[in-house]
Image (cartoon, rainbow, N blue to C red; front, side, top):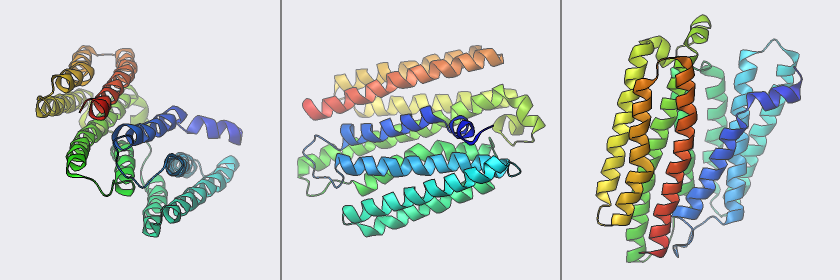
Length: 296
């Protein structure tokens, strides 16, 4: 296989585009347009996103390299991944100095080192790799909050900002659980292949039935978390109804579909429907941000 073919097949480009979209969504929905004085301009957030994407690309390529060291093409891919790491780090350093916060360069150095360690020492499609993969997006958004925290806020703006932080943290936890659920379901569909390759996925460690029970438990916890968020904002009927319709009902429907899933085909169908329901949930996030921007 040619290097270019490997490059495009190894990297989950749809996931990277989704990550980029979420970063800009957080910036626009929860930091921009509230009258907050923030650190990052849209040019800065573009540089930040570019740096993150290079780190993620490097992780995908490095993991492929460490599992296919014999191939000559893999040796060339190592050079490409190293170049992505360096460019990602330098982009982060340039951003840190551009916003006059050079100490944030250490954050990007940490990300570069972590990318190497994660790629080299975690097994492909293992439970640990699924855990770390689930944490990537929440960690990225937390970095955006850390770098772009508003300054010189009034009392009313602080109240709004704290509410936005609370909502964001709940959605980040939901994102972590949702990604872990998706990876575990994928593990159920590939349990035979993973068993042959001695991969320590949740489905292998617990068995197919127990893994399904764990997934159902995580979905139930997510539903409780969504319900908690809805009731914490119940003073606004708009927010309560929006969260119930865009998040809680899709979550309950997903739980129902999981209980009916028995074959690999039904699990794959569930994954496709989950992606569509996630898009519906994102629309709910936008609707919540609209309320805080233009109604309060």
